Image (cartoon, rainbow, N blue to C red):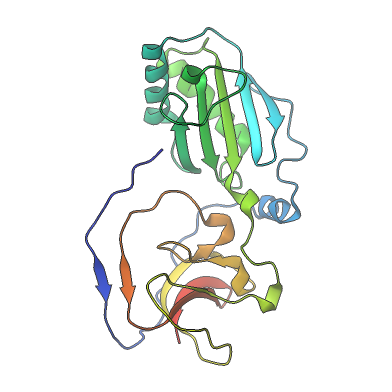
Length: 242
């Protein structure tokens, strides 16, 4: 699993609310896939095979398996290193190797088992399977057994599904109650499209649409002196003061 970097405290003191900066570019997302996540059908209709892998739907995503030669500990470490060098990247939220974690596979030993959290609406399962196979080939493990637990980040869904009744999420550093009649003064653009405040997730450092949330973050503490919330402003998720 990715290590979190620890950086110095950053404090945000009192200041006038500046105009909201231009929204940063979003990752490329298949919004039809996002709708399937909302409908609870993200793991439905998966193909039985993807490249060399047999595919089994799970409640949180999918399980990929390929039969092959068994590995010793040294080879299992090299297999993991091969993935880290070329198999992971955009679309992967977190990754762990069963040799070093409690995550295991029922159809493979620890040397041939990895677990991934993936934004499947950014990285389709077929594309992920291709990346995995290529990584194995480049690392000299084209004939090795492999099982991959893939959890789709988007299956978590938005924290609130009550439409206009949803309230923005408070920043962890501030106190105060959101006033639905009060103004909103955007201080920092976020990521992703939204319709209501329930579509936005501010549980970490970033205010982002629920389908972009998840994964490791830099362990930085941010302090706001005024009540600060993550919500939907002009159909974009953003941090704002009241």
